[in-house]
Image (cartoon, rainbow, N blue to C red):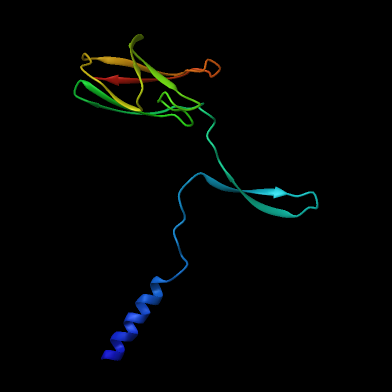
Length: 138
């Protein structure tokens, strides 16, 4: 019986020591590359977002409040860093606030339909302003 127990324990330990490790999730893809001498080689490239050309917004309505979360690649909402600035918030076409955080609440909206526009404003005027509009119903 002891021999069977030891054999089972060794089998379990050996089964756990495999090289089958999970691959990390990400935006990695393999591309084909034809070299001048006709050989086919595989290279791995990192798929990068266009620099600060997209803004992803998630929102959730609860009662008369709207929770908004923004993701802007390669852009900082702090006053430090190379690419930084703020978010200009418009509610129904009127300027409501300057936002310096990626997640925020809009509180006490009146009942009905609202158009919320978020504009990325860079402190460097060279960068284009990016706007995104969402529609919510309270």
